[in-house]
Length: 132
Image (cartoon, rainbow, N blue to C red):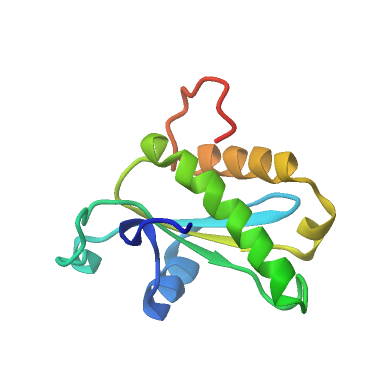
């Protein structure tokens, strides 16, 4: 099961804009880029035009096998799905994976993603013991 459509970043122009104008924080296995969503990019057809949208980018440098890349994407999407209630509205986020992500376990990915999202002020800073 993937993220709901309202929380997906799908257009190439949106990815490019986030890469060019966004703030980036890099961890050991992930890089997260965030851009506050301008009003002109709001999609009137979306159910929640102020929702934060996420895009996940995993290149073939990470793994040439699509099975491996899709597994990593599913893990990241699962973590994001669990934390939808803690995510602040009005941002566009692109999560880029590094080749070192292959060798780490699921919990390590979740901890690093949580840390990067908190640093970039995408999630509330007062969560309990949630992973994300």
